[in-house]
Image (cartoon, rainbow, N blue to C red; front, side):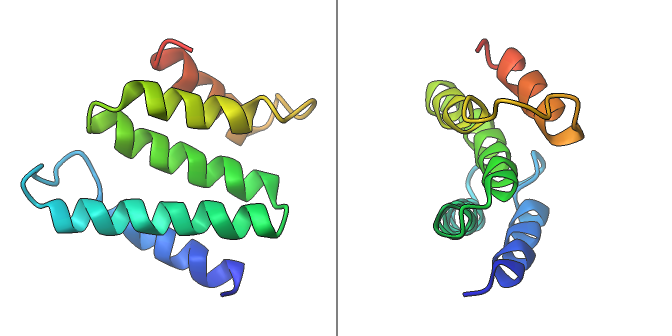
Length: 104
């Protein structure tokens, strides 16, 4: 699958997984989680670290809303800690803020 297709699905998943989605609607949340996992997988296979970071942030936000704070923090920290430069970019600043929000 092309990265662009995964990105499109991930954007769609982001749209169906906002905080307003009732927790009882497990199918939408499961679809969003699946899309984020797929985005992570494709980004890793293509060694696209920026896309991996974005997918990790999306999945971390979803997990955080579901009370999976430790898993969310661990996933995001693993990707964030790979970077050695570019900390002034919007993506890395956003990731750092999310990690701090989760206590990491």
